[in-house]
Image 1 (tube, rainbow, N blue to C red):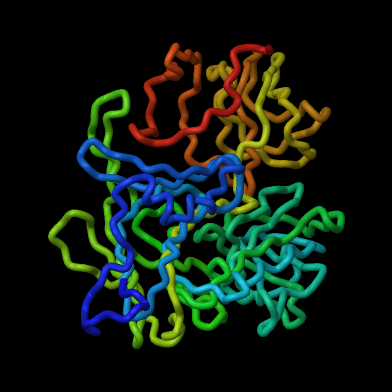
Image 2: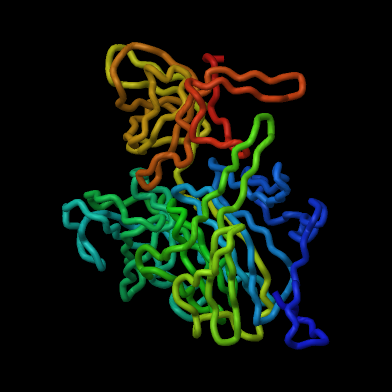
Length: 475
């Protein structure tokens, strides 16, 4: 990346971002990681592998929403190339971005305030038409106030993403919902894609929630940038991502289908796990390298496999109009986001019991206020034989602030521990490990050993995991 400061040779290629060889240098360059949502459980760390590589790892908590980011406060001007090796463990809801951007002097553009939902339904009805009673992939939302219009602060456009929050039938609490249609009065919207995939086919009659209980939440365009260009890793397919650009605070220009799946093909973004030993002897490498190119006449993305004699492959189409202004002072930023309406564990189970029927009575810690009609899944009960994980969301009936019932398998038993997953958008908890913890021991050196219900699978050496709801008995 070429510095904004003049050099003795106008044609010289300079490295504006230096190599950071120590954790102290890296932390200072990233503003001491002040943008990491540590309160929500996110963290950043520098990992040294067994074969010489050092990796900056940013991890988002699977049980809390919010964003974390790191910014290199080194302003550069065009022409520039931001080249980096990166990988991402993707789940259903979260997404990450890597970009060069410019914020206005007054700070990032605003995020529109949440808007109350008047009514919502899902069927085959589109473009604001009435509910059809036929199962379909179109959700129709009527808002209490109009969406911010073009020209106003935080304007909302077709193709923008929103989050639906607060509906009792949380199958319709979709995350990363892509706006397909906006009515003339800007109070009716429809959508058919969430998390870059088509919505499940449902017939949900008109729901009119109590005003103020259900809302639509918004993102700001490209983290509030006025000018920018970069890549957005979303969805669960490691070989696809969206390319995003912005000029002068206008709408994002995205790749793919504006009102649906906005991704294009990219090189593999999954981590490369190299076989290692035990007790911390491991190596995780990025599978691919990326190059964000911003020049006066065009901006584009290239990628290639990491550590290979391969040519760079251009992705999507070059941006010749909607691209950062030539006068922009651009900075590099890496960001990970967990949307507010993502599926996540919300309560820890004390016990589950059944007495000769398919009705399960779940007693939990009361950390979440459930409502009859919520859809949940159940994970991690120590008696995994009688209370196997529920993977398809089921509706619950609330008995008290700490008890509800649901329909599962029949029998008579009581089991302890586990998690209640709020299955927003009708989706199960992403990234779950199917084995159930049977016992835990901690050595004098605080080394934690977990004994599972079977051989551990679905997790690699060097991965980060959360334990939630582990319990041996009632107390």
